Length: 184
Image 1 (spheres, helix red, strand yellow):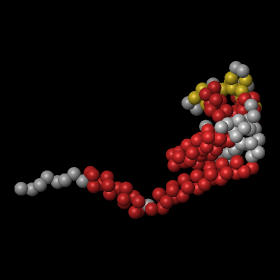
Image 2: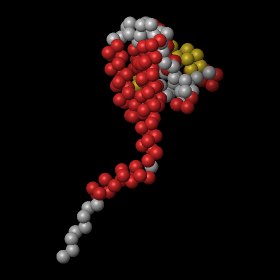
Image 3: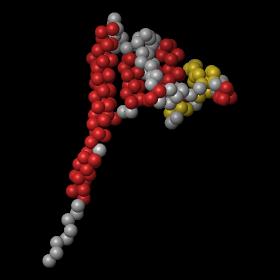
Image 4: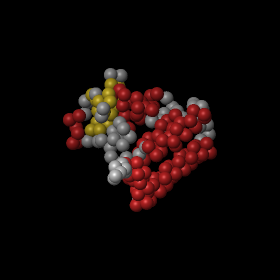
């Protein structure tokens, strides 16, 4: 009497990760190296902040900053490089110091792409106050949405990553980040 063939599903599921790791060992190593390097960079950021800044925790509890730093370190594998950079911007903004900021400038990470308009926040909302010649027709227009979120929500998120001594400084700086698709 012949036996029914065994379902190879479990064996295949176990063999697939092994085959991938044997065929592409550099992929896992590259991801681990990337994550390690980002964590080293985050550690250096925190160390240098403490060494150079005269009063880094004048406006935020050191434990709160460290908790946010460790949370970002833990999320590194799940974030794009641009996402980690935005996380560093958020850490710098937590300090509430207009002279301590992280600006995304890496063209390799896509931060060189900027929508050629200047936005400003007003009491009645966000507006285009200047634009490159090709976008001049938008000057004076009110911004209603940015991507899938309202302009108000986008501005709130941008304020979270904008360094400033006070709300007016953050409100002045935040609209610039709304013109950077990689930050959004």
